Length: 411
Image 1 (cartoon, rainbow, N blue to C red):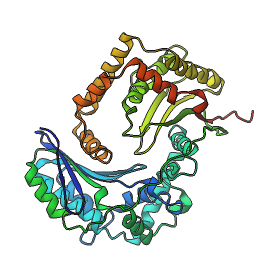
Image 2: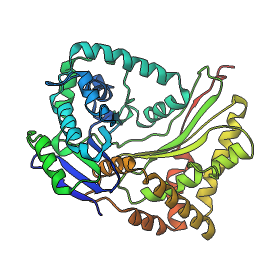
Image 3: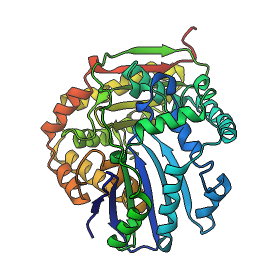
Image 4: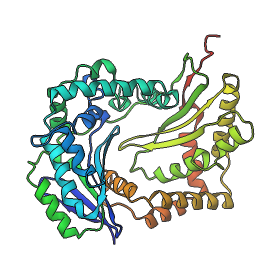
């Protein structure tokens, strides 16, 4: 069955995809994340994800957690630069219980100061743990390098000195300013009649007063390539090279997805893995990423290596980028690349939880979500000339920024 859509009078949207499995997946996704914070609010979107489970007008934290876990369901949440999501997986008969809890958490949370103070310590530990992992931190530091002072550069976890002074009024202010009803999507995948689901959504979300977004996010306009090395005492040197890239609605998005997969995707036969790991043994971890946002994107290549192999590894990366800029893919190469990504896409969408989250997040960018067949058809329509043009726009040397954690920088 195809996806079905519904909009409440207050602007909250519903997207549902029927699936005959016994397990249903449902989530509430809010189009608000760390890029919507002011400088003094850095980290508050993620902090709200933590404290929103700590009590409502009719439930204490224990009762919130037990409401779904007592029936074997899973309750979780995450924050990105552009979204906050609360979601659950549960047996199909428990749709109403899950939706009622979502509504209670989102619109009746009381944010007790005692719970806020306890959760600060947890978030501070999370920040410190993140700093102990250079292979993770370098991605956030790289986006700060790319976007400079723009709000999208904010680290999702925030800064410790700001987290320490968050209070209930700060949380309520951010929610009032950013949790707009026309920027809330309820996404569902499960075995439930759509009319019944609409009635449940009306029951638990229809009474929420309309609060429509009146302003747009600050656009990403200026990008200046930067080259930066930091002395950091790790066992390995960590390097990330990249550029700003296409937004989630750009016509070239799928072309870059395909190029990224060829270059450093999850397959062990990616060009970077073969060049740096298989042929030379310079690195255990070499990968490339493309992260599209609503109005921009990030393409980057990451690897960790011994300091003595750092420059040689960078040279090999540059060689692979040059090859994609100078030489069109042959017919057989292009066909294999398309087959590979089509298979990876199909496997990723085998998870109904992934489908639920993907549907909800994608609906913020488009009015109708493409089917898997439509996406694969679009990929198959890409030509070698398309990919060559994209490679020369995104991989051009003078446009690339570099960030290196180098333990031997001062030797």
